[in-house]
Amino acid sequence: IYDQSGIKIDSIENTIEAPTGDTIPIYIKDYKAENISKIFVDVLDYKMQKTLGATSVRLEDFKFTNGDIPKLSVSYSSPYRFDIKEKIDILVLLYDSLGSVALVGKTSIDGLYTDKKDDFSLAWRLPTRSDIKTVKLIPITYTYAK
Image (cartoon, rainbow, N blue to C red; front, top):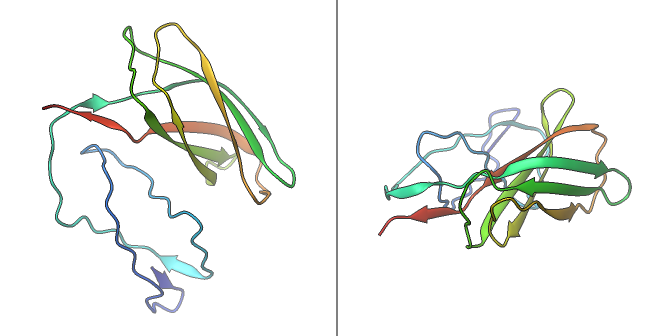
């Protein structure tokens, strides 16, 4: 992470699971810095594993309420004709009217079930000035083949 004058501010190392060929957001919880101009991401020492495919979640509807404590309510369903009974971690991206990510959250759901709509809610500690227009659900749990 570099500041506007090109001086290195910080370096962060972590491990993630991600599908190959996809562009995924990387969210660093509670990291605060000002005057960031460049962020570089390098993939080092990666290991390929055969997956049964990334899970998808269908966004049915959402309601965002801003204020001192911004709140999001999401209704979702399964796009599959079979049940997924395992816990699924979900990264939730909230976009403003310009298409920029305004807020990010993370939650878990207890599976996806055929012909069943479900919902979850998230809240943030600080308000946003952005007008939320779109929500994207990105599952970050993958089932690996044996």
